[in-house]
Image 1 (cartoon, rainbow, N blue to C red):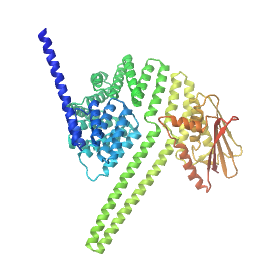
Image 2: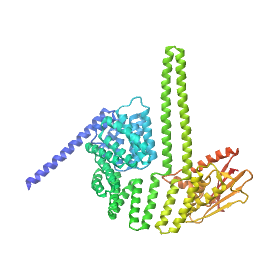
Image 3: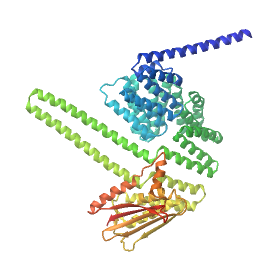
Image 4: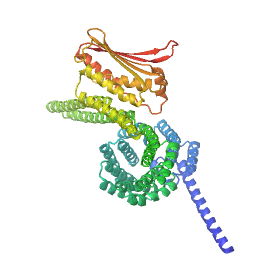
Length: 639
């Protein structure tokens, strides 16, 4: 027994000595790098590859760099600490450290570190589903690389990171072709370096995009290729991601036993890695398998685990998936009340992930990016023409000078003309998209279908049929009028009635709605732009009346002002514009309505046709105690 004791003790002592020796070796490396003031980011990462995930070592490097006036070391340590906190899903701390790195890099005019810090910020924001911010950071990093005169390996590595993350964002927004384009660019760079981890990531992402397009077998090939690279690189996190993807393919192919065999080991692996984002994702994927196998209690336990992580760490996309799957389980078990409760929570979380504002802002960024790239091409062409001019002056051959200058000017004029055509086409396309979005608001359609589902769940078939009939007529009216620039006032009034009826159902018919139309009007002859009033009515319902408690009234008056003008009044007794604006500002995810601005633009073009002007006035209403008592919108339209 004594011999065994001393043998075990010697082994433990040897292990501790080795660990202390390794720690001392890392400390010496940090000290040497700080004292030498190493300038290369790649050398810093390579030399400290065993310490970049150790927060104690990185904090030590941060302090030493400050004491020795070594800003590059401070920037590096801040970024590595940000990455560590991102892995542990402490996103506020991660953002704080990456911001510190970026500001310091900007202060010392270190372009490479600025680009890297922007990319790291983009990755964190993408993890929290803040796609608009993420896309802005990555595009900013990418644009900075375009302004550099020479591109070295460090810059190429950052370009690959930018393309990879932008591809992930486009994939989230279901823009598969754009996503694939960026993943392929990143893959070409990683092939140049033979970077196993980078290759694994991009083959995984390409598989994801191909899967979204519906090609399961091709996606499986990409995922298996990614898995082999992850195994070569020894990346546990990479194995988790690949196994999740491969398991989901088998789940889609209705092979849940095979999916369970692949995804089950991921749970332990994710716990070892300590990345809560992927631990939450593994729980969701396992739950999907158990739902397929009809083992609902196991699925519920896994989904509740995922929900706890998602809510604690602010991962709304995972929370949305968990709520949706819980709703499915309760519906299968016949507990429709609980199913409806979780479905409502799913709607709330999903709206946070991809609300209309995110989609619109991302579209704006894409358009700006395209314009910037075109502008740079024109500038490059201009520089080439300047070089041509200098050469022509040196030759002193006036005929050739005139000819080449004419060709250069013609080329520039042609590029400018094409650019103008592109801009005009883009503007028209944006207007058409905005018009369609205002008419066929996806949130309105989605919520209306949910109301129908609610009636079905509550076993109210008559109400469901009545609501569906009105909703179908409204959609038909919208589609029929979408091709017309003007419709009759009679058609507009019918559409208003149906729209308010559909929306009022979602308010449990609490709104007292009145529509007063003057007998002096010839409803068939008077023409106005289609669905002109809808954005104002939507504002009254959802910003004025929705937050209000108690009696809710909506009144619409339509009458002639004189022989030249039609007046439409939309009056609500809601909370008023000031309070509505305060509520809107307090929300984390704000949705900007484009409908009212679009209505103004359409009225502007409509009025020009009649050589007259239009007016829109917003009037705040107050009761006898001077307290807000709703809003009145007065629209004057040329007849």
